[in-house]
Image (cartoon, rainbow, N blue to C red; front, side):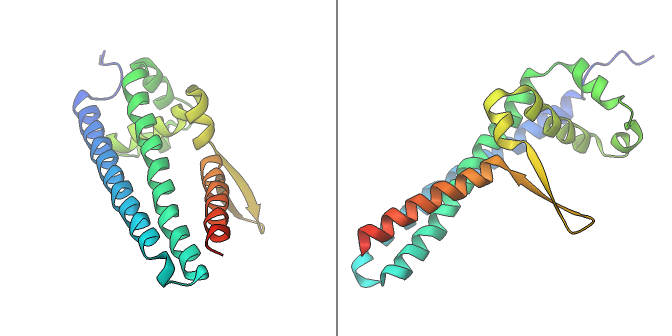
Length: 166
């Protein structure tokens, strides 16, 4: 009888390594896009207000997207180190066990974390909980609170930049 509790330690190590590389790459993107925003501010008098606002919006979308991904991968890393192995085992043996066992071990752990974070992490869980909006008769669009908030913040930021430019 197998007395192992939780995912395989090698898989946990692989996934943490992957999350670490994602955190590093998104942090690098933030630095690069920040430099792009500073360069745009340097040449603001050489571009039209509409081009300035559009470019500022594109660069800002990248910054906010990368920041939200850092929060997301940080939450997944925290969840992987905080949750009990018995929780993973009970999730794995739930009624839709057949679908979950069809995934590779790495996929199982990732799917578990995707369910665990919204249920157990107060703020980060609410940011990443998916709500679905029905479109037509058979298509659902996932809507995440973090995505809606980032678009609202970007809208305010670009309006402020545009008004300051005009």
